[in-house]
Image (cartoon, rainbow, N blue to C red; front, side, top):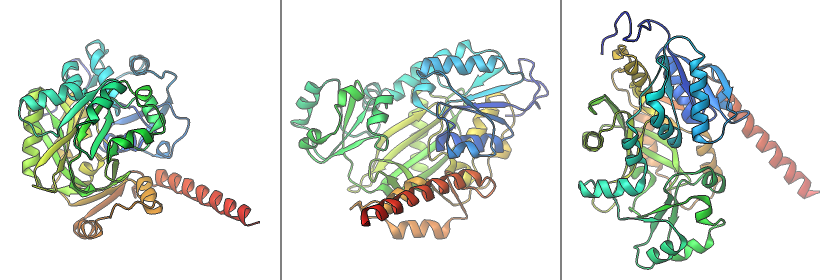
Length: 413
């Protein structure tokens, strides 16, 4: 899309865009800030946390503490702040519930504020695992066997004849779920008895859950396609990659990932989001079956970037920057460069894997192969042009190591 001298509502086509990014304390927020800064934006972050290594990044022009806590109140607070700014503004949520809430009120945004969000009904369809499972099954998209559970009674009934192993995850990752399960976004159940060993009551942490058939395979069998879709739900730009390690192992978030060239996954992603009428940033995560090599959809993400989104920028496709410029009708051709093989990692997750005693094997040969062919490397925190966040993480590790040494010293006395 070519830029013009003036945007449609009178904001200059060359004026610096102010980007507002939620979740500034999280690696997803940090990666988004770096991408937006690289695309020429002035970036302001929002967070409910008092401190984070992410805050040290030079990508941020400012970090603002949120006084609100509920998604609706947070959305209202950020929109109110946007009304106090001059010039073009781009809004980027980095959490599902905020993407949904901003989508709900996007028609009420002030004229200087734009976002890259699908319609509310599309967001709800793709985020609500009940609706999505039914919708995808009706259209013959490949999904594992899935049951939605709304009570302990429904859970007990479902597990009686459900095939195990199975995956149990909340319909929406609520604040209470995050409190009780800060690392696990899903639970791998080897059998019905595993439910009894949980340390917290499930339906106090979230109102509903998804019980899905476990697709056999390793961390490296999880693939993803990141994309940006225009107002006609046509794929403008995309990137495919695969996870090489997850933490926690098998069911967690990305620890190490790399690029792939996967036209089949790109086509599946384009077809699914076109059918759903999705626009803006969207990604599809799938798992390749160890038995027949077929893909099974594990999770769509809409209206926001995700943890591994920086791998696309590392490879040459700045999807977050494209979303911002597209929202303001500006040229983004310079944000798509010739693809470079890459490897991206989340330092704290890798550290936890190294010190943990998981019996899940690590695909060392696959990781080494990806590393040897990669031309670019970066971490969630580590970037040569922006070293301060990683130094903050390193400081955390050193303090943890010092406390461990002191405890060992005290025990030996």
